[in-house]
Image (cartoon, rainbow, N blue to C red; front, side, top):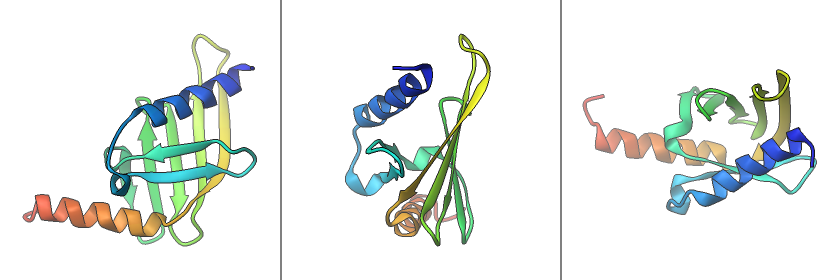
Length: 114
């Protein structure tokens, strides 16, 4: 397994190791493999009527999801101890707009003054 494959495997293992209720998760599948990623409300850093942006691994990984087309682009900066390089993965996130709206409703009910 190459270094890019190792990074993907670590991301999938990390995502599968975190436990949460199904409604608290956004599941995204890659286009070219059966690999998938799971996102949580705490990783959402921006959402508009068309896009959602997620960050994890201290900003090393950024994912942009189009809420209308459900297309996903995940960019990872692979740095030390490796030679600096970017990895870009493409996929889709089924039902992303519904999941984001649920997160926003839940957040509004927890913080009604915000």
